[in-house]
Length: 412
Image (cartoon, rainbow, N blue to C red; front, side, top):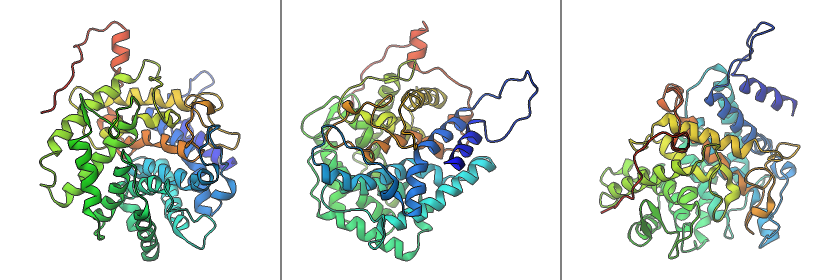
């Protein structure tokens, strides 16, 4: 714990002690330093414990007051925590950017990730994770997404561990996905196989893409999550980032893959990025609507992913998105009682609010909040980090600035 506090202090102070006179003010913390400090605060307990084989021993498993299957939820919580953290920190681990302190921190996380993956798939290990039975399909797919986003990690796993990962992912094929966003979880695991030259089931990928493309687009940049539309953040938690990353894998292998759909999806995803940026209020709050709201900043997975993949529409400057997402991080992670006394996340959106959770929510699942940190995979020289701060839409409007009106986008 002492070591953890030292690292956080180093990060928050801008990566290094600064000499100052008695009257001098501390140097301002830049956004990247702040993001790294917050990422480290959230991810460290999960990654360090799993690497040491002590995740089951030390991670508290708190279930929703409305839990739907207590025994099952408690068992799968560990894969939920690891899969989600890995998917969120993967682009940063893939990067080589940053100063000496950031690179040292990255190397620590790389070491933990290599050991952590080995622990997760070691059938004889104390932290072996469950890959069958329903929910594991979701979090195996998040783990697969993390490996898609971080080729460095896959390349540094031993042949035995790679084989164990493949076996674990193949075990999820016995799980029949729900007729909703879950079909993309099956698709992502197959996309992982595709990316790394492993035999894959193209039907599981194609089925998910075609259902969303042909049946579930409801207009103006938004998909229905299955046959029935719900006003929630699942377009961001899962649907659009998954479609974007799956298509990227397929089109890297075959540049003409899904030519009939990729241009439409590009328009749809850009429109939804605009809508996401407009949802962020001047103080970083956002509408509290729909399922899984305790995923905190994970509600902006799509906006973060579009920033990482440099797919933002022209009307969104990277610096204004940085400002908006920074405000969300502050609003959702700095609230009192967000963390336990031992540094684990509590269930809530702005603090400890278990009443906001659905029956499937537990300590592990709320680590989806790490998805907001995806732009740390961009180098510090990228406009996302290097450009001067820009106000986002809500700040401009509520400060009286005149802007062009927003309009729906018709996708043909």
